[in-house]
Length: 170
Image (tube, rainbow, N blue to C red; front, side, top):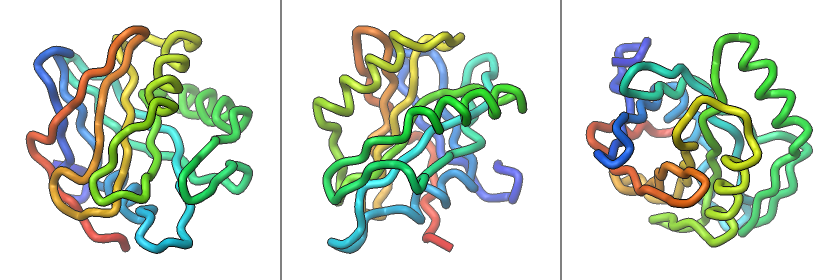
């Protein structure tokens, strides 16, 4: 259960050995930014959380930011702002665990740029994780609307919802 009594989104795959728990406030934040209209650009941000024994609990999603570059089919974050967020969150006890962004599709699928970006980020970062997480939020409100995957320097592992609640935007 999340802090508000709402269920937490949970994703897993036995190949990585731990679960991803996404707090209800993060689910609401991501859902709020879906690209439902043709005028909505892609947006995104970073994911921060608490590392536990057999899970990562995502408690904060940042973004979108005014200085990100966005269009209907692309999103390029402001790297200097991301680095500042990572330092500030780490100082507050939260670890950077991955990235999120939207796609203008009912059921999103990653592009080669998405995969390359996560691999590059994993390789260049100093961290304690075996994988980084990527969440892509689509337009659909069904249980399989998100793409969630774990990334290391060489591979991608798709994660699947095991217990999840999808809330409408505020």
